[in-house]
Image 1: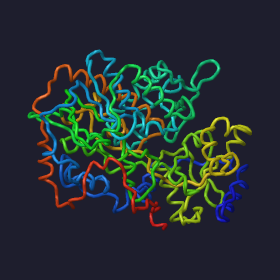
Image 2: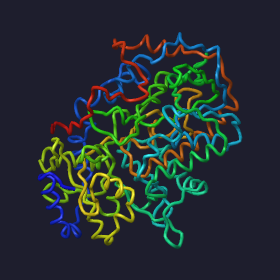
Image 3: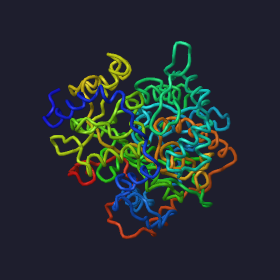
Image 4: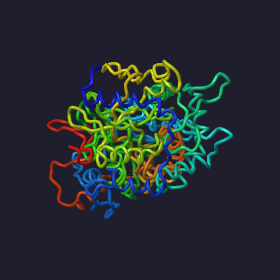
Amino acid sequence: MEYPPTIQRAIDRAAATRERRLTQAIPRLSLDDAQAVLRRYHPDFRGDAVRPVHVGPNAGETMLREVADLLEAHALLDPAAVDLAHVDFAVDVLIIGGGGAGCVTALWAQASGIAADALLITQKLRLGDSNSIMATGAMQMAVTPEDSPARHFLDTLGGGLFAAKPELVRALVHDAPAMVQWREALGVMGTKTPDGNFILTKTGGCSRDRVTTPAEYTGKEMMKVLVDEVENQGIPVLEFTPAVELLTDERGRVAGAVLWDLETGEYLVAAAKATVLTTGGFGRLHMQGFPTTNHYGATADGLVLAYRAGARLRDMDSCQYHPTGSIYPRQIYGRLATEKFRSVGAQPVNRHGELFVHPLEPRNIEAATFIRECTDRGNGVMTPSGLHGVLLDVPLLELIHGKGYVARFFGAEYRALQRFDIDIAQDPLLVYPTIHFQNGGIDITDRTETTVPGLFAAGEVTGGVHGKNRLGGNALTEYLVFGRRAGIHAAAYAKTSSVGKLTLAHVARYEAALPPVAPETKAPRLLPDYRGRGVHVKHLGVL
């Protein structure tokens, strides 16, 4: 494509330094330097990024401002408008959220042989519509002689700034190899060598090659198989029917949910002996005005529902900004440029064609150095709309791996960018950090139990697995590992549990405790509203 002069000059400089950078070694940041760059440049550490929440189980604790605002909102429904005496669905296990974690939970709840009766609701749109289907990354698993679950454990714990719950990380790394085998038994095959071994690579923060990918459209491939399996197993599914409030009983246990039919506008009552939240993340809250890679439905519903019912949250002062979000052209603003590029040799370079950071630092550190390069150092590349970014030198892969490598091994990305007249085998991508993952969430045990009886959670809606930062490849592993655990343990709980008198009394109590809030401020948000509002990246003051 024909680039504006400022971008074209930077592209030319990157091309001129490419041969030299092939042999350039750049050291990893020391622990002290990494901490310093995080504290000064990462968006989480901006003075206005967080504030205390004043109500609920975490009252007095600091959270991201957008999350705190959502938690301190009025209920979307009027409890008086719901007839709790009329139960539309009565099930053993209710799964709220139809992405990867939800599908895996439903399959394992049924496979446990304990819960004969489950219901999966998609929360927003169709079965499979979620962040899971958009994933371009892969799965981490320690399976080689040079690696071990212990190394995977240490990498994950360190990459999350040692804020994760060790028992959850232990579960993740212990179960990962078996869940990859289960995934393959369903038909999601990993990329392998001719002799049958997995082709493994690193992502930022990994000390060993342990990342495997089933296909270029990783998320789509996995979700296609999981959705097919849910349908083949005859698991009941409700689409376009989000949960707008959890139900409790007279003993304070979660006992199902109130659903809202998006087509008819009617409330439906779903009573359940065990309820599992698998509603995903919060990227569409657009923290600090940043763009996001997330699915349209990622509006933190599960956090709101769980919190009102009394479940504790954790690590809600942290958000993952993926370092390589596209910022040019504007049609792909915020779109993820997969970390797989950097895992096989692509480099981030500034407007002078200089490699300024090791390509495989953990994502939070990598993102912070991008911001530093564009702000304090003034070495960013400017777009016509006034945004700054750095170049991701994908064409370098053609020199490292041979001509045609990018089109062969990154065909999905190659074709997607061709629609905008960008040939990533010849020209670098212009990137800047974009909101990618909800690091924290609902506090759970390694059995996926929340702090409220009857309520379980799995996937991105939870906290504790990743701490303050997630390593690439651990998200898909997480939803397989903890989706399985949620299905098994929720089904076991349902076997010995019963549903008491249904009530929304917890909603009334929460409303009474709220600080002064505008009447129109309500949650859950369900779908983001972009009318009259532009989501423009703030780039920490560049604009």
